[in-house]
Length: 394
Picture (cartoon, helix red, strand yellow):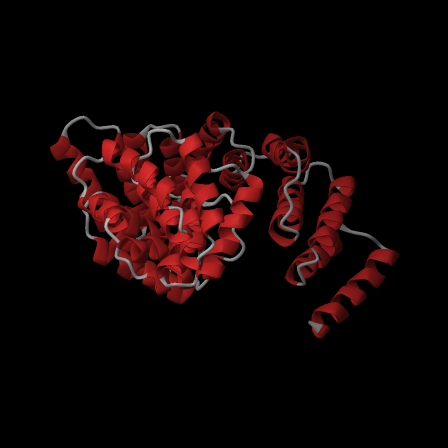
């Protein structure tokens, strides 16, 4: 770093004496190494002033702006700003000399930043005409075709790229395309074949890059939703969490898996790794249910109270009523169960718990009245009958 800074100072002295394209370009390259992309961009502007026909300067200036704003500052500039600082300069470069790199860069920006897929397609095709065997261009063209739902064309492009060089991301993108194609097929046999092709591609992506988190995620989702291989999917999610311990989607998947098998301690563990949740997120509700199942009623109550401050959610009244019942706060339990019934008149099971709350409160008359209603809705229910008999014959 220190050596580069010394070189920059030396070149700057020379520029101050006699500014030349070569000196500006040399300094711009050094600024790039120091990730001072804005200063590199300014040097390319100076080159353009000295020589408006230097097509490389237009190209590099656009790239440095991209490096500065998108890569380094991680900004989201307006579409107009993106076009003025990248597309305009790249098109000027193309006017001076048609190169595949400028066409590719324009296509990439139209696709990734501007979401203008038709324009991206046009410049990808231009790049391919100039240089047919550019792997990155073939991959991008495949992605564009996939976005345009031209899946067979997308697969052809990925096939061409893979013939030139096996690459993890190319297998990943082709796998995604196979899945999309499967989703648009009517023949079940063909659909399964496409899903199997996708699974094979995800495996190849991971063979080449064992830390490809997206490939693990896509594989897990496919194994779970299509092939019903839950345990294999769980292995993928666990691998993701080895690489990215706080990956939200993987932690959510693990939390849901443990919720389904009743391992509530792990439900809470994985939900907590997601971080701060919106109070209306369904995971908050599952977290509260898990606390309840573990006998941590105050923790469950805290979540239910938070949700009900934001939304009058009928199911939360039912769940919070259960918590109050466990805590012996029978009037609050009765209030919550009655609120739930108002919002959900078709409810059946809640009448039993409402009757139980009245019974525990010592109001047998109200308990029997409610339980009779429960029995109307659920005739011959043994649990209801037992509670009624317990009250009548105590």
